[in-house]
Image (cartoon, rainbow, N blue to C red):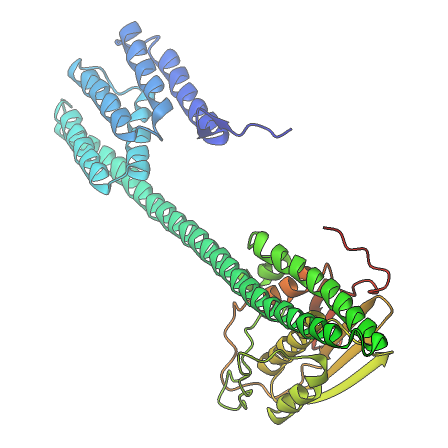
Length: 428
C-alpha cells in the first residue's frame, strides 16, 4: 500500500505549506484587528486575503488580483497598515515565481509600486512620507527580486529535468532499435540455418529414394540424417518464431551503464574494430556466409593482425554443434574481441576459452585491459552487450559481463545444447 502524495492533483507537501501560510495570515487577521479602527470589517478583509492565498501556486494571477483589490480597499478606507498585509508580499512573490509569463510579474510589480506611492502620499508628514515610500519600496523591490531569482532557478531545474527525461526516452528508443535490429539479424541467420537444413533433407530424401532397392543400408542412413536434420531444423524454426514473436525490449542490466556518465563499466560497443586511426579494420564478411566454430581461428588471426594478443583454448570433447549454436558462439567471440580492441586498446591480451560439456557449451572471453590507449576514444552508448544478450536468450542461456577485479573485462556465456536426436521428443 502506497501513501497518497497528492491532493486534488497537487503535491501534498505544497498543499500543506500553502494551508500553513494561509492559516498564519488568518491568525494575523484575527489578532491584529481586535483593537484597531478596522474592527471586524478589517478582520473579514484579512480573512479574504488568507483564503485567496490557498490557490497562490495554481492561480497566481487571480490570487494577486484579489489580494491587490482588498489591499487598495484597505488604503481607500484609510486604515493603517496591519500585520496581515504581508499577504500582499506573499501574493507578489507567488505571481513572479509561478506565473506562466514573466510579463505578469512585471505588471504586478508596477501595481505594487503604485500601491506604495498611494500609501505614502496619504502620510501627513513629509518626512514620514519619504521614509514610508523608501521603506515600502525597498521591501517590495527585495521581494520581487527574490522571487525573480527563485523563478529563474526553478525554470532552470525544470529544463534540466525535461532534458534528462528526453535523453532517457531517446536512450530507451535507441536500445529498443538496437534490440530490434539484432533480432532481425538473428532471425535472418536462423532462416539461413533452417533453409540449409531443409536443403540437406531434400538431398538425403532423394538419395534414399534412388538407393532404396539397391542399397537398403545407405537408404536407412539417409533417412536417419533426414530425421536428425528435421528435428534440428524444427528446433531452429521454433527459435526463429520466438525471436519474431517476442517484443523488442532493452535489458536494464545492459542498458543501465550507458546512462551513467563516468561509470567504471565498459560502454557497450557495436562490432567495428576500426574505431581509431591506429586500428586495423576487420575484414568485412560476405553477407551470404554462415560462420561456424571452425572459423574461429581465422577470426582470431584477424584480431591479432589488428593488434590484439589472443590466446585460444578448447576444453572438453568437441562434438558436432547445431549450426545455429555455432553461429552464436562465433558472433559472441567477434563482438567480445571487438569491444576489447575498442576499449582495452591495441596491445591488450585477450583469452578465448570454449568449454564443451555434455549438455552445454561455455564461452569465456577476458582481457587484461592493458593495451595502448586509442588516440580517438570509442564513443559511448553502443549496444553490443544488448545484442549478445539477445543471442544468448534465444537458446535460454545466460550471459554475464563486467570488469575484472584485477583489471580488464570478462564475458561468460552459457549455451544449453539440444537433446540428443535419438532421445528428443518432437511435438506438433
